[in-house]
Amino acid sequence: MTFPSFSVGETLRAADMNAVGLWLVKSQTVGAGVGSVTITNCFNADFRNYRVTFEGGTQSGNNLATQLQFAGGAGHYASMRYDPFNGVGAGVLPTFNQTFCYFGLTGTQNQATFVMDVFAPFTTEWTKYTGSFTGDNFAGTGSGVNASNTSLTGFTLVWPGATNTGGIVKVYGYRN
Image (tube, rainbow, N blue to C red):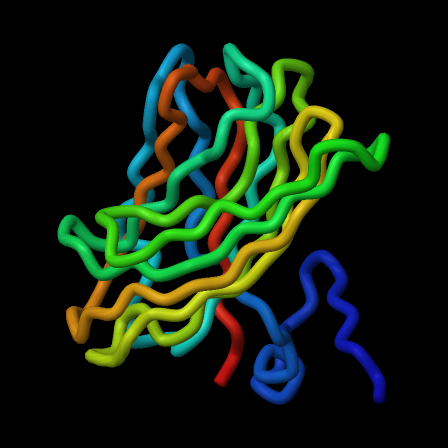
């Protein structure tokens, strides 16, 4: 497969543009000393599935579970597994019919990063997600659903027991 290559001043052909697989939908810098951030207007009818990334933030505490909220009500079902780099203290955080699910761990030295695929958030189907993360001396995975048939346009990240300063959340749409 030949990937498109663009040059400054070049006229872009529809065939080249249609070959691009991910489109940046939203980039949002997280504020200083905040306990949560809401990413609005990032899911829409243009894409069915999305990739979400977070990197560069510093939290005020290490190894605290980050919460992910797709909607305001209950209906989040998920499982997050984390493994320490030294092999001691692995664990699982389940979520059963809560107003949030766990996804990611905090880190005070810019260690907290994640990548997550979100499936069908704008449709009137259950929103599903799966991904991986790093934190302070931990790495892990998580998957779950928001068991609601509500069309979603955004999501919220919450750092309970900590604050976050900086970092960038990016949302990309997968080309249909």
